[in-house]
Length: 89
Image 1 (cartoon, one colour):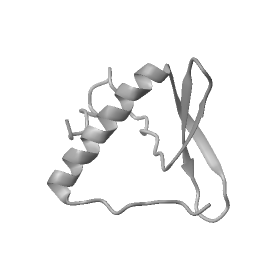
Image 2 (cartoon, one colour):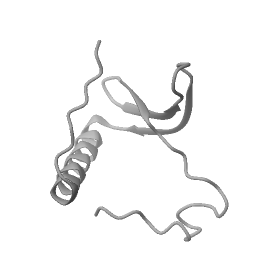
Image 3 (cartoon, helix red, strand yellow):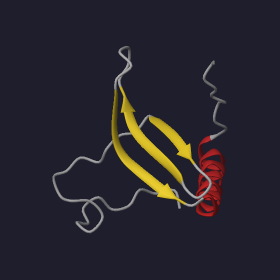
Image 4 (cartoon, one colour):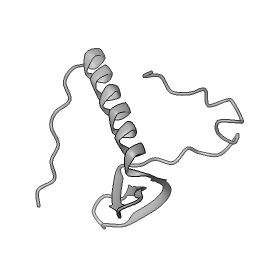
């Protein structure tokens, strides 16, 4: 955990194709599924360029959340505590 996958392996990502960058996520859900939509947000103009989606069940989302928590913990062990980020509403 904690290292990027090999980018030269064609089975992981097609050669010559840039991996999408995401700095924005929107989440929608109903009783039986959860959808995460990843996008690139552009400074200043509010434009979003959605590029990737994950649809899963609420149960699998718990596993996904646990994996993210473990990754954050590992990151903070290696590089130091992350600042808390909260958007004002």
